[in-house]
Image 1: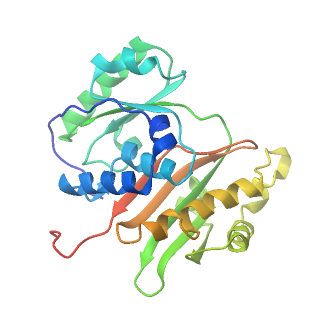
Image 2: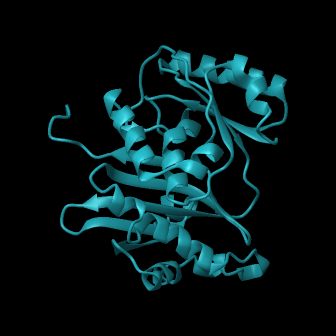
Length: 264
């Protein structure tokens, strides 16, 4: 969870969409191995979303760029409005330190955003390894799916409403993995905010089947938490934007499990 220090390195442009079409468990392990080789304790957001996509969780179409010189190439694959996010090994909560810019419509605005974020990060002494350009998700309800390794029970999966509901009200439910589809449905109905997802007060209705699929991708048999139980200590997908047609992960943190030889 630490946040620190300043320099820059280049990153090759890559796409989530191409990874999602061909991603496999072997690809995922390679991503994690590379992060460990660089001394990382967590995957950056771009890598974390590649992992989610490989397990069937929808993510926005995105491009990773090293700097402003790669904007025009990236824009050829994306549809505005876009969000810009900094990639830094020192920062997990990008929005808290000014590392995110929203509603960017064209190259000039993106260049100004990169300049602003770069200056902000360097003033704080944080390293910059590139930026994510990402299509902004349409509106919907914010939900969170998470997971962790409990010393007594093993892998646990968590579900709740995102935003203030999870941060302040702690309106969440838990199950031991692997969960069944019935478990997933019970988790959804257990939270106090369940009527919101069902369209209370004229809001949009999120199909329960889509929520169940997302939970199974994380906590079910063959899901992320069990399949990568030896590699991942904590999963935090917050928020997922859930509408009547789609559930899409717009932010994600995957904390790597410590190994016996790791420092600290």
